[in-house]
Amino acid sequence: MSAAEIRCGVVGTGHLGRLHARILSELPGARLAGVVDAVPERAEAAAREYRCAACPTIEALLAQDIRFAVVATPTERHYEVGRALLAAGVATLIEKPFTRTIEEADGLIEAARASAGGFVGVGHVERFNPVVQAARRHVRDPLFIECDRVHPFSFRSMDVGVVLDLMIHDLDLVHWLAGGRMVDLEAVGASVLSGFEDMAFARLRFSNGCTALLRASRVSLRKVRKLRIFCENLYVSLDYLARTGMKIRVKEGAPARLAALAAEGPPSLPFADFLDIEDLAVEEAEPLRAELEAFVGAVRDGAPPPVGGEVGREALACALRIGEAIQRHQASVREMRSGLTSQPFE
Image 1: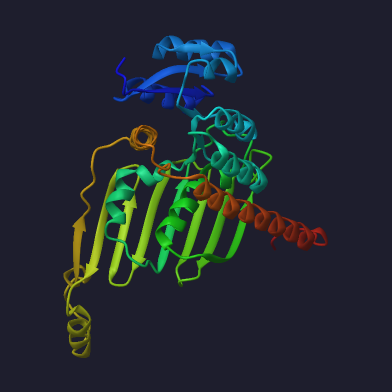
Image 2: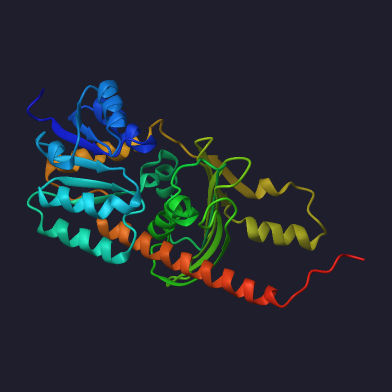
């Protein structure tokens, strides 16, 4: 083992935790030292596959002399596990959602400030998506952002609703791209299969005039993950699944040319003739690997986390407000319908 290698651990070896373990076991500059899980057999299976120690407890994981850990447990354990790691001076990446409550988020942020050598970061992995990275280079002062994230039911993340499960990715991106402070929101949603909302729609308005519309569902028959960004004289469209993107600009002088042609009657030219359309140059990269490279690099360099706890808190606060708005909407719908009797169509 190289002296420069960062010893790492993973807490929680479910679907996402195993992905973290795999990448950390392969990552140059990192050494996966151990994994821990509430189900010992699951930790042992991951340890065999990724050639590390299967630890029965957090204390046993800390005994592996780790400097960096990923927390990929159910959300209800994020606070407890994060506090233990930070108290031991371990730099900690907590998967989204950061915590269950703002109070827990504030507690972890404060624990990180008091930690000797540790920091707390949050796994908003879409920031490291090469499609998003390619788009962000061109986006300035967006006017309108539209996010679609719909999936078939996965039978995972059953402890939270779709807002904290899926939409929170886009909530983080919207805050990151919009550049302003959120001043207003509206949201509706419905439960289909779980005890939480399984589909949700939200509209956010920011202090700089940007508006964002977000749709999330985990009860769709197909998977769609798209992002559309409208700026002045620029439109950017991203397809996460296809790993493609394009940017469209209005050609210089096009409005005056279009007005002149329209004065003579409907133009016969196709609309695309007034536009510059260009595919985005998207690098080949695995977002989760890029995220872990950035976090391990921050530990090695003694730098702040690439995505800090305050960022996770902001996304969580917005998600919780959306959840409250959905509950109010559902209550109002029940109240409106309580006095109604369904009548057949005639």
